[in-house]
Image 1 (cartoon, rainbow, N blue to C red):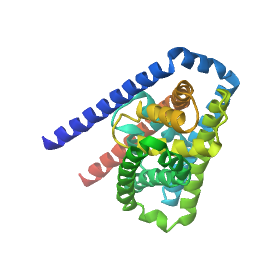
Image 2 (cartoon, helix red, strand yellow; image 1 turned 120 degrees about the vertical axis):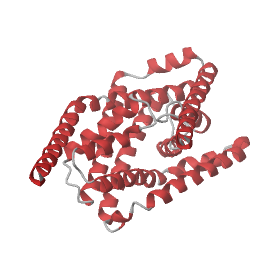
Image 3 (cartoon, rainbow, N blue to C red; image 1 turned 180 degrees about the vertical axis):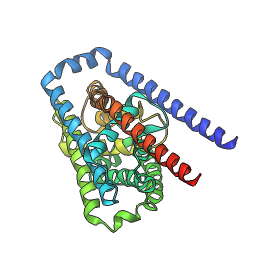
Length: 313
């Protein structure tokens, strides 16, 4: 009963956090003006949007490649095509099936049903998350420095960032316990972190293109730093899959520290989410093939079990 209560409370917390973030976005929208947001959207050409779409797609391929490297270094013989398929299916679940389960569970369930080693797959997903944390940490100072120097709200921001760091460090310590395998394989780790940097480069370049299309000349590294801060904020379990929290954080940080208007910041945040969702639709294309592979694997195991039972009889 207590476990059920805690689970329900966690779900209610995330629903409440998502709702609160959406309310804050509406407040920002009223402050920036709906007409200004519409005008900002019209400033962005289809060429820029298509370029952003291509960059986000490439960034997601880097994420799939990162997991593939970790799996192969853990002696899990999963083809790259299947790693890409499972990754995009997980992204599809994140964006269109907004539950507390998440894409990582979808990836793990798919890998297990296909017959891959469960402990290594589970550890590889934890390592995948950790290499994301490590990669983003390199650009985090470019965002933290202007935030900590941000004037009147500096003290409150420092307290909030201290709490964020405590939660992140706790996650780091828990994940480290399942990470021992890859400490003995530094080249695989470097490759995974390199994929994280490739993913980040594509994502930040997309935001840089969008911001500049709105007429704001903002430093590339500042955008990278503020995006890293947003990344860490969305790791907090206060919303469902980061909905609302990512958009509000990105809008607030860009408008406060990057010289971007509230309307422009909200426009970029919404477009980034939209590009993520469009790219994740690739997962729907892979879904039937993954289900078929899972079914074949399940039937194969069931046949083997029946044969074993028959011989034992």
